[in-house]
Image: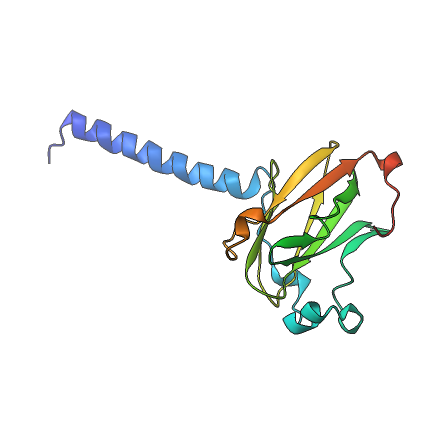
Length: 173
């Protein structure tokens, strides 16, 4: 069987493209540290979060920033149309320390995206999205909701302020 040289050339080019595409997918999965949020955060009754009865929940605390032995834990409630904390009061975290975000919502599906970073998660009622980030540099990062959550979706935003470790006052805010 005779295969024309142009057909061989195009077949070879197609094969190179397939290998290159597979390579980009593998690099994207392991190279820049991108990970899927798993279910390690657990679940919570959305009505309990809506009522603000955080004492009755084992795996979610009152929204705020808590300094722990392993780093900093940030508990955030996303609700129409704000992040608590984050919207009315910026979330202050230290640079160079692991920061674990615990994000949930009592009402509808929201998004939690820190602009300019790879911090990005869907926030589903009843689920606690848990992910750890270490900020290398100080700065301000905007929090935006990237899931359409209602008529005020476009106003749902907040801010994370990363400060020097010496300027971090720790504890709750």
